[in-house]
Length: 217
Image 1 (cartoon, rainbow, N blue to C red):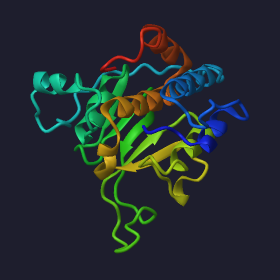
Image 2: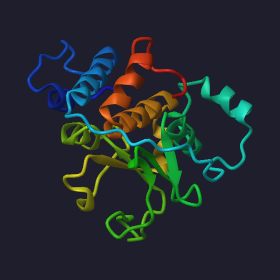
Image 3: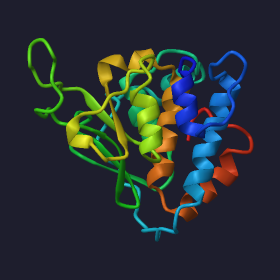
Image 4: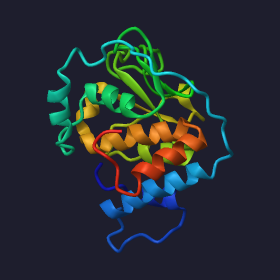
């Protein structure tokens, strides 16, 4: 994502000093992500629920797996809808409900972390009043992270009154291209971490975080 604003940085770190530029640098954004992870691991323990891996629907239109994997190697390219499905499914202990890619719900331990929302009256086009048909919901760690994303005008994230007090952000699929694949991957992984049990989050972090986030779950 583009550099976060001064207000965003202060929201994440309280009154921690900012770099001399007054902007969050890429390195500081990486620290923010780690700060969020540390906060997650301090949450009270949540019991893990063992669930199996369901085959689920064909969520990516039958795209060739090897061709898709080749495209995943370019993590600077614009994100696409199929990336959301692939990245969510790449995380461990994930099940998916919903009969089609238009209403898929991705869960870990029976808790949703990404879902494709049906058209609802709280998310509409401001000019036509037509309900958005392409809203995706991503969980976040807490209200501070939510506000940091939705208040930063350089990002495509938003919320509605229906989600007041809910630790999640919304984004239209039509605006996914404003994120890079790497940025979307971080959003999906953080959503999973926000909803996974502490034990599962610790396991995933111990195998992935030390060496940097992988190109796929």
